[in-house]
Length: 259
Image (cartoon, rainbow, N blue to C red):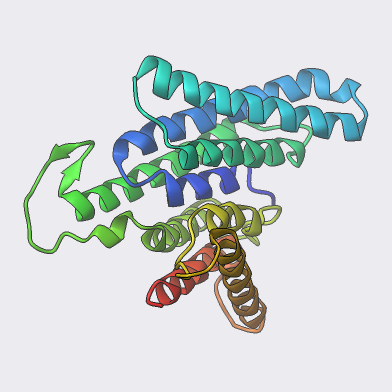
């Protein structure tokens, strides 16, 4: 069964935009808004276009809308500053939303879409609360407690991958407990942009471009090898596919960050 909510877009948001509740709240709202808007526009006009033209139009439309809307809301309305890396991740979010729209069923069940999307949004918020509290002892920027076991590591991609894998497995258990889950969703499209923009280690004395390429190759090879090994493992339906891939990537990042 295909996942009805944009799992890949929410997975990327859970890893990258869950460092604090403020970013998670805004990102989740915009993902649901853009996905619903994109589906409505595609159902109205997509049927009149050839397949190749529809794909190109949806990609261009959703990338443009996603990037522009995040810029307007974050900079124009809320007055936040956006780093270049975050802006690039917004573009990747647009690509993932477009992919979900292109491969969605012709007769979209919007009730189910919003129900599952609300669950994913709640998961994103819960992950952000855990990460922000464990990093700063705060929630939505308000300090809740001052304790000695706060860890900066919760703000890193390592914990983002691990918590996202756990969160998606729980959502799969809730929504797809009797079926094969995560079909139609590819973890590669979530992992690749993170690996490109957030490398687990750097190589001193080497050209930054070469260092980035080495990082990408090593991470993808390790994740691929683990993925192939897990094919022969007996793991539950809930954690198959994307959740276990993200968990594996988190542990790969943890190991490589020690280099």
